[in-house]
Image (cartoon, rainbow, N blue to C red; front, side, top):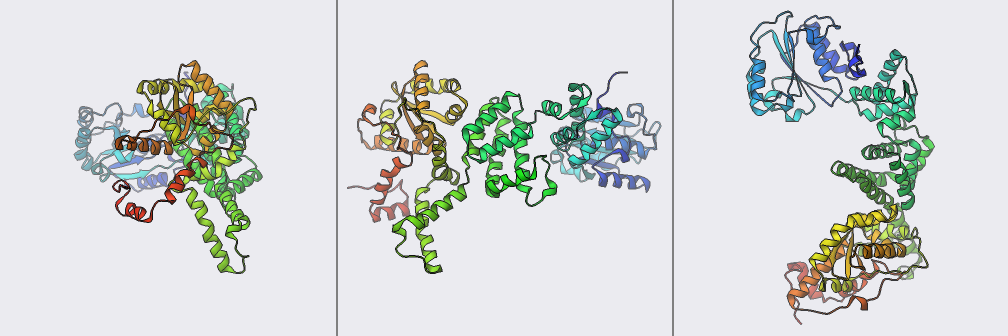
Length: 588
């Protein structure tokens, strides 16, 4: 006899065999026993949760047919696949036999699977029959997307929502199957399979089938990890520890090791989200934890990360998860994810400690010791403008990166004494490139950029991935970075700059470089265009401008702009606030 997949062998034959849908099965059993069955039902829910199995069981039960009987041998149970027969002609062929009496059974039952795939015309053809079918005809519609079913159809059916099956229930079912198959297994391996199945019993049995085939009739943790593409708890814990410590190079190295083993990118993101969930719940709902990692490890990470930071990390993971579905370069997106996660280095704690340090050590804010609550309140108010002024006009996430994370990342940079910093930055450098900019030069730089950055190591490649060429002349190239924190790191990384110059030279691209943040790039370009329109021209030679020094930072370079803003006459500032800066023109 030909081999059959486990999900077919162990498909439920009675309502008692079904697991995880007790409310639905009990309701249907009671309706059959009391002869109060409806004429139309809609079974909706995620894949592999028992919708079609329940429909077949219901069709046999109301007709008193033995559970071991194959549905294909019963002419009065008609199963219709709407996914492959969605036209109105297909529906009319089915409905043309509705008025004929059942051949053997008491009721003729039509099971329409994936009903949401029917065309509008097919739905309209079904509508009248579904509303008033013959007394001996019943319809069961099954779908994974009930929102696509017209409300006119929904209102004519009894609707049953099938829920995802709990992983513990799935695991217990797998144990039962393996015992019947007389196959040895490891408990943690079944937990991995149940978690990957995401509430679908059919998926769980299919994965179990693969693991058995892979492991020669032995279900082990290693085999389960290999088949599902999941990451071991040791690797997962090492990764989360590295990003939580803000150790970007270490985080990227752990990621690289995971990817070398052939782990699935989507599965890795799901595993990280699952671990963060357990870290979040360890202090509030210990009984809900699914991970096998020791509670002490989870509690230590929970204390280190905090709820706010875990929430930020999950939002980043969710965004990357959506992007992974639309790209073939999953490795690059995972590296970008790693950089983003490791940049979230305890922003709240560091900001508060820096405020405290300012209020204690800055003599300009301490004209007198604190004596009462009012003094404390005044000091807090005086301290706030320091932070507000620094992060003004910057989105919160970027502000944290610029004010908090950049200093931490700067400590991780390994400077090469034999190399010197080669790049320039600031408005004058950008203007110098724009004066000689050519569209052809920029096009060549953009087309070669993805290939060029693959020559770098993992850490440098991740840094350059979030940079893009935005302007180019025959001699110079402007690179705009998405995050000021990484711009800060790039400005001080002499080794990366020298490697980049060498790579540009090999590609016959401009070798003089200007680094700038995306936000500043848009501002400087707008300023340059405004000067051109007003007739203000100034020849700037890029080679006359100084390169960045080891003390230079992207933030410090913006200080001259702040000084200019502060010296602006009050009447001009008031006019701009009232009418907008685009309308107000100052004439000397």
